[in-house]
Amino acid sequence: MVKTKILHRYDVSPPADSVPATALPLTFFDIPWLLCPPMQRLFFYDSPQSLPSFVQTTLPLLVRSLSLALRRLFPFAASLVLPLAPPQKPYILYCNGDSLSLTVAESPADFAELVSDKGRDATLIHPLVPQLPLPRTSDGARMWPLMAIQVTLFPNKGICVGVQFLHVAADGRSFNHFMKSWASIHRSGGDPACVDPDDPSPFYDQEGVKDPNGLEPILLKDWWSCVGSSPSPISIEPLHAVADKVRATFVLGKAHIDGLKAQVLSQLKNDHVDLESDPVHLSTFVVTCAFVWVCMIESKQIEHQHHDQSSLESSNDELCSFSFVADCRDRLEYLMPSTYFGNCLGIYFLSERRRMLLGKSGISHAVRLIGRKVKEVERGGGLRGAEGWIRDWKVFDNGELVTVAGSPRLKVYDTDFGWGRPTKSHVVQIDISGAIALTESRNGDGGVEVGLALTRVCMEKFVCMFEKGSKSFMSL
Image (tube, rainbow, N blue to C red):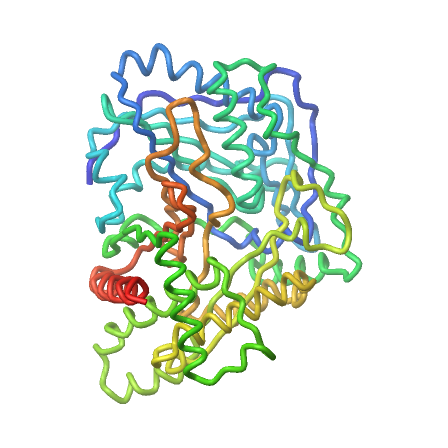
């Protein structure tokens, strides 16, 4: 693994006296994410710069624009306050002078390899992820920094902006609001008066999150039950835990997705499914998740084959679980601003026996399972089962749970600092979580990029399954 060289570390705050001391209470949408390991995302830019030019010109503007972005989106400079004993409730606290850690580094690594879709050692990108500072103790509570950023220069090749943050501070929509605000200010030359018209002010009123069903005390009690007497954010596993993992990006273009939808419909008709009484939800999200989930299950069969045949047969009766989240800002019974800052995600689970997903109708069966859950959410069921968001996670996470990270709707590739659209973006925490990372296709054709991290033997099998499936879609 190529070693990065740390050039400088900054503590970046909002401009002096621009943000008053603020305490933000956690809502029932936030509490489940106290159990989530930190989020890690990398943005790569093809922006050839020499080290002197970067240090003299680009770096000062990055620091200034970050400070100005924090004036509007200050929670990322704040701390998560974790009390040491129940039944107290955690909260986010910003005090004047609070800051986030910005690390500046230089890397001799192969930039082209890191932005490639091809499979490669998962550990290669981890030196580009910043480390969150250690917590401190204050007034009988522990104060955890919420975000850290690392900007890494690949001299005369490109730049990587790496971010690590605690999910309890913000969901994907709020995080991308922050990144696009920072990028917009940087693109404008650091002009605080130059606000992108597509960048509205964030909405911070957590009191606007209504809780008529009393979800907050239920989830808070479940969280305390999980963490016991030593509450802390769950940390990312050490690097050696991903030493046997391979990362790759798989692209499903619009033509592939249309072909996949046609194949699913054809299979359902062959299975004599009554599509009039039970119409199937054939969105891009549903068919992509179903196809990738089934390919992942099939690829992991090779690991079960290391056991005896009876073990393999019994594993086919085991449940495989799938989980996804959905933005609830426009799915509640009351009006929630689209710019609400924090978490506003519903968490949804489903499961099926492995043999049902590995049969000839496995993909179409997975489409129906995921599609039904999506339809339920869209028909007003966004908070159905919310009281079990923490307990259900423990039940379903039996080693066969696949989750989804990211969303094509977040438009990650619109994050332009003035260097053009990102060449590549990676969700790093999937190396540990095993999640499916979804991003919109960079070329804007309506397709989807799928990021995965699997063991080498499983990745080889997955590639075969994916390529075979893709060819079958295009032959329709």
